[in-house]
Amino acid sequence: MDLTDTQQAILALIAERIDADGVPPSQTEIARAFGFKGVRAAQYHLEALEQAGAIRRVPGQARGIRLAGQGAQTRAAAVSEPVRDDVLRLPVLGRVAAGLP
Image (spheres, rainbow, N blue to C red):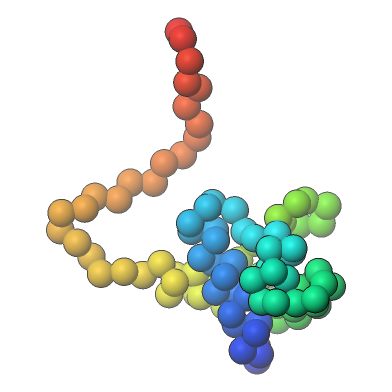
């Protein structure tokens, strides 16, 4: 899978945003981050990433970008950090209803 430098950078941005915010960036956010004049340029690169198997897109869903193949490997590389003995990382699932009982 041959990706351009821009496509690799977009893939890294998607991985970083999923890890930081829990959701992928929108096409508009991708366009702004890379200085594209319009959203169509971001769409073009996302189409190329999808054809290369690096991402999957969910039709009709806002921010419907999922990492697959090389994209998942990029995400793993982006989030790898040194292991610390004094930190315990636990995944958090679900939502907590905050309010009066």
